[in-house]
Image (cartoon, rainbow, N blue to C red):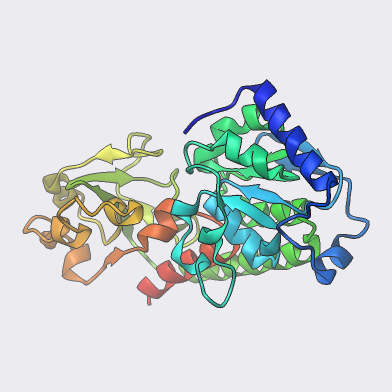
Length: 331
């Protein structure tokens, strides 16, 4: 994706401002509800994953480079403020005919490679990065008011911080009251599931991701942390080898030897729309070795939604759906 120099970005932004001054209007109309709720809320200093950012006034044009942030903004009822997204990564539930189809907005690159020129043409009041786009925060923040909505999984309390990030984003877009409500709903649900887990003996869990026929294992410090820190499953191994983004490659023999009570599976090929993989996660794991595990024998191999867990990860409505998905598997 082509990047602009800082000077070129400044020129593009100036041209966009000139167009607005000549009678242009924002492509994201501000509703009466949004204007009323946001009155008096700005300037607002937002503490986020990359530091602090002061937002001087109610944003009317927001570029969102993270799908969890987009999910939250939509849940807040502020989707009309969004003017640009990586359109190829918009999850299916945000293409709903009954709501805003965010895939029809201006394309601003990909989750891993923002198109700075396209962003500059939109002249946004706010840019939101997160997870895969977080590394561009420094560059983007030199030219645009930018916040980092990432929820790092290499720290304890991932699920708690995922809920708190909703309130942070809500304040940034002028929906603080609704954001507090959504955060409280998530925290209440987390507390409910934790209480249930304390009364149950869930046993051990293994999180596997299939990718091109290969299998990797992921532990508690990963995007699948809620399986452990909310639902009380114990990891099948201790240590750091299986943590992080890529996890640890694992053989079917090792899966059998570790004998997990539950196996939670994410099909990465399905998540990214890779139609050339040739085999699904179900096909990869349907073999004699895996079928000897307690998880397989007791019907406890759970295929999680790839789009939710791999692409989006957190987000107000998405995180709730993930919690409900795991909860349903334990009934």
